[in-house]
Length: 72
Image: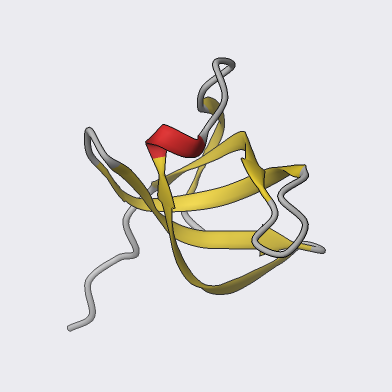
């Protein structure tokens, strides 16, 4: 018997682009968040991409904002 997918938070925050350093708004389905990192799947063009780990030290003062909870 399969277990249901957990309801995961989707958050938004600004984060520097790895190539240009320019702040870019990220939309992430969070798997785990602690005092150092936000970890999850970035959503681009309505599709999840690969797993990413974002350092909270690099997120500007506006911080992380909850967008919604999703089970998909």
